[in-house]
Length: 152
Image (cartoon, rainbow, N blue to C red; front, side, top):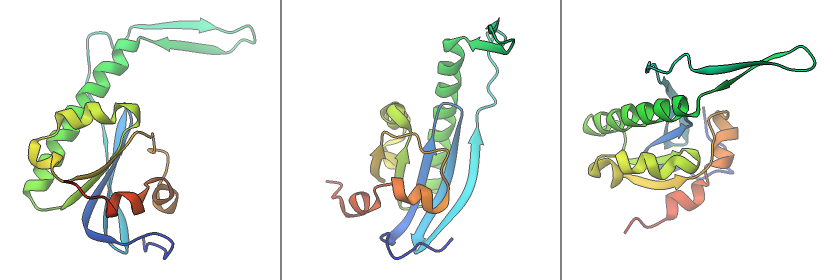
């Protein structure tokens, strides 16, 4: 999509990653173009995959409580796979700069990044933005701050 004039242009090929504990979306910003690349989901199966507690509400609806450990394992697996993918993409020169939004876990993901990938990080955003695409996503990325920050 073409980026509106209300947003700054990307001065370098910038990979934008928005992630939560289940999936990540990758976008590429270059000049005034912002393109969706792909969605990465965890397919990691673990021993406690069926460890859920089912319940019936007073209104007759069904619900389930998922073991919290399941979410932690999935997130860990996703972040490891994502860190590896970002390193491979950097080696292929698919991007020059990187912006990551991954909720409060953004620093957990950063710790897993190869040092060459970490050197490309323009901005870490502690927001969950996976529900947004296109212009709605650009509104939340704090691009002016990210693009003008000095990485020294």
